[in-house]
Amino acid sequence: MTIEFSAAADLWLESRCYQTPSALHGWLTGYLASGARLKPADWLVEAQEYLELEDAPEAPLQSFLQTFYDDVLVGLSGESMEFSVLLPADEDADIDEQVECLAQWSKGFLDGFGASGQIQGKVPEDVMEVLQDLDAFSQASLDDPQDPQNEMLYLELAEHARVAALTVFYGMNKAAPATKTLH
Image (tube, rainbow, N blue to C red; front, side, top):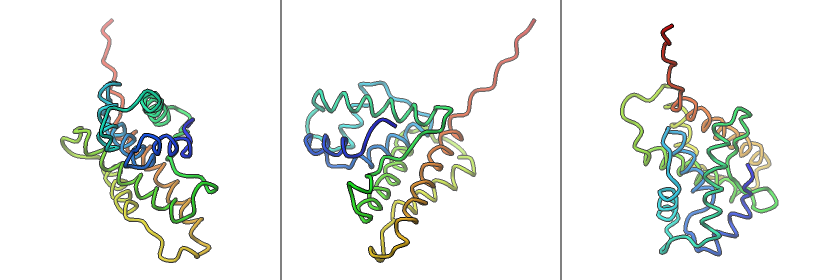
């Protein structure tokens, strides 16, 4: 992914966005993982609404949001499986903030997945399992911020969220079967 959390957070602050970059990244990931896609103008409207912006995004944020969309879709659909969850780096946030952003990302994922309107029937069992995991992650918090195990547990949860997003994407975006060609 080419988007860095700190750059997104700075732009969010300048633009007076009321959701974190992690929350919007989760929302978009969930939306795209469901099999839905957005036209550029529709994406900007959805992002404006989710970020609780009073006015349409200004040019720098609009441009950034298009890159954001493209990066998430390429990350999910690429064969290299290089998708990553947008979370603050260790040097940008303490463990409490990182866990909070992971919780916001997970909630955003579930919100986006539901907002897509794609789910009209049975959800594959493996997809349902990871959605339940993400629901649990959306409520994550630290009991003891000083516990030395927190960092390791956080990294494990973040990796699980990454794999969960890919699992949902591949489960809900199956290629249509090839049609038989008559010779």
